[in-house]
Length: 326
Image (cartoon, rainbow, N blue to C red; front, side, top):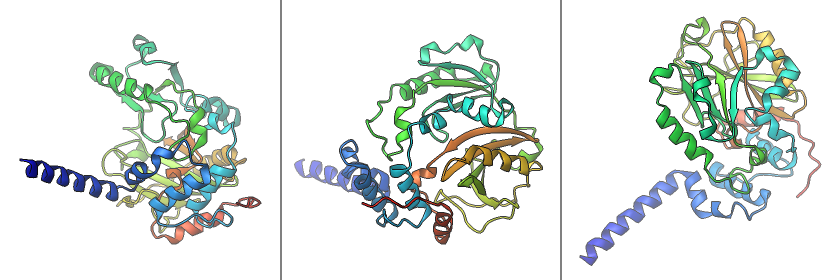
């Protein structure tokens, strides 16, 4: 009996070890992540980078895109950046720079799940949590009569009650100060859009901007099914690399060049002019441009480019004031 229990426990231990080693993030969190609130930025990020990327960060002379994103976290982070990534607060900033016509209208903002005014919501809308990145904390309602409100309330409650660490797990410090709220926005009806025919989801146009100059547009299609990622330059030439998702693939069909690409580029220039690097996310539905979000640290600087040489090429485009020595 004891032998059987020991064997069962040993199998569970081996299974756990294999899981942790296979997933570097979980392995790091299990070994070092618990010291997140104790270790200083440079030491913590150096260790996480070593676990995730297999190399050490050259803090004095960073070269790659990944290294420079880590450098920007430590040396170029400003308190006001919090408002640029707060999904509610950023709207006013964007409107002052490019106009309210590019901002998706807000229906309501609430501090707690129980404060949501469900009776005031239209038949179609989108709910978001203001401090979550990517597609986390986003709930889309296309038809209120079939909307699983009970399940959404459960998930929102879990997110809103989630404890915030003193320090962000990837040291993206602007996220630490965001006032977590729930925001409801108007739903963008993209299904009948002519430029969205090759995607089951709203197409993301993510512009990588270096010192106020958009260089590449990362186009993401079919995010919730078979996601594809294509990069284009500003003349809409398809680029020979993919990233930052290591399993991402180019789409089989080319992405049509937006007819108002010049306008999209102009918007990105205005929104990125004061930053060494920032990603500006836009939507484009039959010529109508909408602002999505701003991102200072794509994939938190731990994303993978294939081929790897583009990690260096994009890194060369980030101009840093390298006057910091450690």
